[in-house]
Image 1 (tube, rainbow, N blue to C red):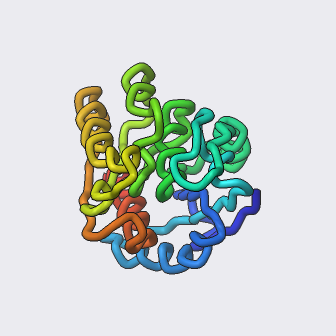
Image 2 (cartoon, rainbow, N blue to C red):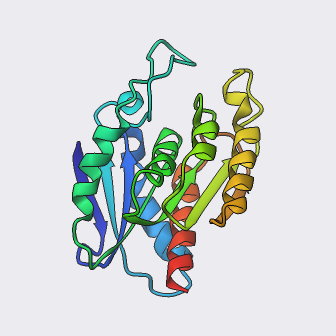
Length: 212
């Protein structure tokens, strides 16, 4: 795991975003987009946490591959333990968020700890086997959750991934019913369109919610 910092390194508002090599290419633009979307001069630090193995490090439990031949290793607990080491300064406010499987990981993390004030799950892999059932049988420990999805993401031939629209609607409804301040934003395009903009919109939303 490698750490890359953006924004104001001394800020008391800290955004944590698990990333891979591809994500690193747009993190600077994501940081600038958060600044431009803010209604005020939001001061923040963004920590990009570069994971070593995407499918292993960010999956909450083991599951078979749904594309390609790389199974999901279920090592999210180890990754979260490392991330929590970045949140030991209790004077600061921490948020966690990510895109795709990192979005799912961030949402799962909100069931493991109360360290985060808000969660961003942008185009999350919420189709992950057993995840909706997990949400319904466990108690979330944050009060603000941002969900988003591209309006073409569920229009795929993959039978598991095509359930993503149904799953995210069900997740949003469940969170509302349990009293969590939740929004679900629909973006134009498929899963691969503007991940930096989608994630930036999520972080902007959760920052505003806790600063109101």
